[in-house]
Image (cartoon, rainbow, N blue to C red; front, side, top):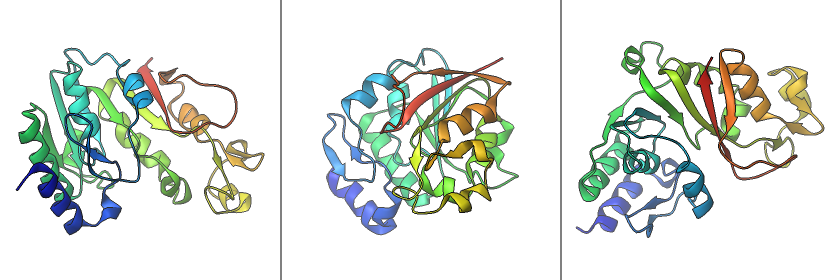
Length: 228
């Protein structure tokens, strides 16, 4: 079977709900549409990260787009992590097609005994992973804490700065007040970037990688955290 046939067969087996990011070939032709597209702005912003000679773990890699990209940008070791076996089969097919040196492993970040926590890397990434479900289920802090244990140097996180509570999250301020301090739930919005910043402070210094403006913006923004 061709590459596109193999990846589409896997996507059909696991269900499209598990294809979070659009899957591309080496020329950025779409193999399987996903919930999140990758555009030129995202590529240009991600390329600002200095991966040269560094070890990297990509948590929640899905079909490995940013795993492969980090390797192309000079990382000496890249490990993509996901918990879905079918997704990882797709990653291995793409790895062979790209002739890429990356590796993929199955881990569950909700497992307190996760074997991945026995290792550390120069850079730990969580890219296009934290979204509306994590906000509504109050899973942000545990996910950020897991990522922090994987590096003593640098964390790369992407988040949407602000979510409109009713229009995007489909909930109420009262519901979010039961989960989060009031300072993050104001003006009809949930201020996710501020929450992430404060979670890591003062242990980590935040540096924006994406260009940012005041107020509401989409899509997600890439942020670097450096150990203080």
